[in-house]
Image (tube, rainbow, N blue to C red; front, top):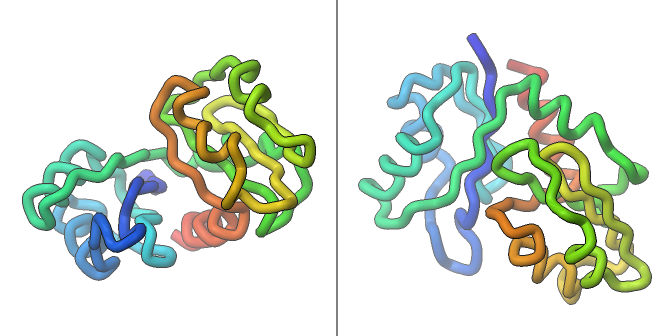
Length: 170
C-alpha cells in the first residue's frame, strides 16, 4: 500500500462545490483507495492506496455536477515538501500553496505583491507565505496563482499538521 494525500480545490467554499465528506470517502473507497480519512469540510483526504486524481475528479463531476482540481501527493512526497519549512510553525500565520508538481516558480512576481509584513519562500512544490496579519486582505495571497503561473491550492499550517497526523496514522 502507498498512502496518498489528496487536496481538493474549491470544495464547500462559499456555498459552491458542495461535497459532503462522507460522499468523498465513499467515492474514494469505490475507486479502490481502501481506508479514506478526511479532515474538515474543505476537501482534504488521506487514503491508504493511491487513486487516480482524474478518475476522482470525473466521479465528483458525474455525481455532484462540478469538477474540482485534485492535487495528489504520495505520502513520502508530502513529507518531503513540508519538511522544507522555512518559517516558524504558526497555525495562523503560516500558509502553504501547493503546486501540482515539484517545480520552482520564479519568486520575483510573487515578491512584488508581498506586503512589508509578509515573508515569502519558494521550495520544491510549495510556495510558503508567512502572513502575521492574515491573508484575508493580502494582495500576495489573492494574486498567488496568477503570479506563480500555474494552478495551486492553499492550506494553513494547522491543516497541514492535521493532514500529516492522518497520514502518519495510516
